[in-house]
Image (cartoon, rainbow over all chains, first blue to last red; front, side, top):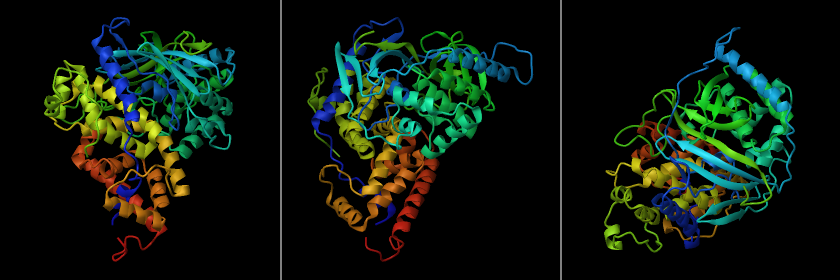
Length: 354
Length: 213
């Protein structure tokens, strides 16, 4: 008996799935097949799919990012390639100066927002647009309670409402631990609110969370192919993903603190004149040369979305991508590999309402 | 391993004709008749679900399977139809989906490390596996294994479990994860070293010659 045999025997008593378990996923697949065969009712070039953008399941990490990207599909979007088009006088490379200015403006804008904490049972509506290279764009309507307890989506014209069982609190009431163990809009809100306000302590808290949880960006599947991030890149990506997960409702003061802290992270750059997955103008912030990007509205500085862009060496083709007949190859530099945005997101009185 | 299948949807082919198509042919033909993709689901969903359930539990596995096949269906035009076995492709997609549940997986393994047993229903594995499983329980090795798996780097765990639980060859794992075969070998070696270290710390005599097997 060697170590591999022991691993093989570990959990080998896991049951084969009962037909009922397989039927649900099969029905979702058949719905997708039927939707592909039927004429699209969405805007040209965009396919509305049956998969919910948000959905929580018992025991599953329900990061809004991850959920919104699960089984993502989408349209080819080629980067305009323009980096930091605005030219600024001042110290250092223009894009660093621009990034600092944008982050300062974002902090100022957010500090003026009301940013109240919704009730746990508050329903949030979101229309996600997801683009993945080589795929038709997809829009998904979904509803999620602020605490993630219930989620809803339409399937075949019928509103499906999921209820997750009550989770045992993890982390002894620590908001960051709760967020890391199960991201919901509420846990993201609370994790943001619990961050220190000063840039140094805030980043130190982020570093502790990253180390304690072995955190790595998981919002954009294509990033799985990117070489390991540096600690500074991880700080930016962690905060970017936290802002995205809290984009439905965020504590304004804490959000402003995050932007101020981002100013102090070495290497953060900004790219203007880009568009998000919904086609809106955006500013792209990054700390890895533009591979992982947090997209902000250029006027309100609200979080619009996330995207990953090839730098010529990463990301490589996502699973099932341009790999047939040979080794995976990176997309040309500047290619937008994945992009996700909320085309619409706001609080509603109940599931099914827009 | 063959498993029970649901009834097949009408697609213009008899069940026998569908059964005669390999995965590559099936996926290629599903370009014009999407309903054929349901056959791919029927072939592979049970094993993929069990793989996911082994890692995340049944409820999360339901989601993983749905997301995996939806993603596969939408990407099927990229599948190289010369490959008759779609398992590496499907396990690759599933591994990415599972990766998004990584913290849940670690949480589950840590729970197993604490209590040593899982609450799953015994589904009746092979006699050989059952025998080893009994020894795991008897020797208290299961918590150490759970600890070791939880401590692995995600990319190392993916490789180890694709080899050990999905029975993929090194080449198939490389294809699934879109990495080189050499990378598969090195990740597997590292994962196994870590597992051995954890188990040896629990029972220094475990891998000595003459130890009970």
